[in-house]
Length: 228
Image 1: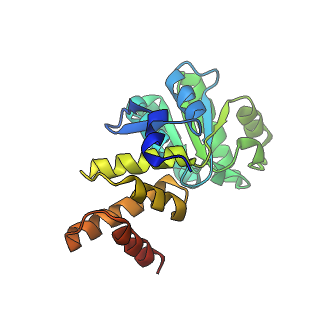
Image 2: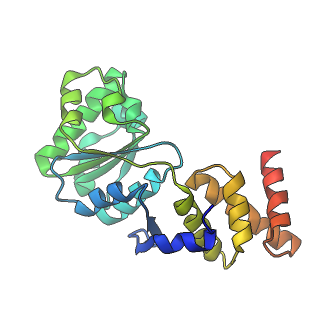
């Protein structure tokens, strides 16, 4: 295993519009590059897809802060006021966009929202677990729109990114973990950014409650409690 203390040096901190530091790594670099190109996208929509915990929701939050876009879920599209959504900022984030697949009302709503965005020069950021080609969309016109729009995948965080995120999350709480602690966590925790946030928050609470520094024994106890 590469020494965790060296891992963040391979990554770059970049300012995120949401007021946080955002780590750019090989696992999310392509998606970040696409978001940086906005509004010069080649189509009215961009799909960012990847497994749970890969960071696509955070990417959506960064883009929302930049574009001032409202957010809606794919499941809620059918009942949403679509013209009002797109009129708010000529940009909309659709989370869990793949939830429209196989639901005629939702598919028609996404197709309508896409056309509204196109007609006003706006954009949609679609967040999903799967690439659009795997959504099994029934509506031919929507399939055609999605096929013509770019889609970029975000991979689950690799060890380098996860180590850097852990270091940053601890630093946000004024904690400086040892290399041993980071290595211990990397070997035992779920490989997702959501899990990293939960674990660091739990360790911070335990450290404060017990008035103990962040050490491997403390972390071991926290992980045992979380698993129990």
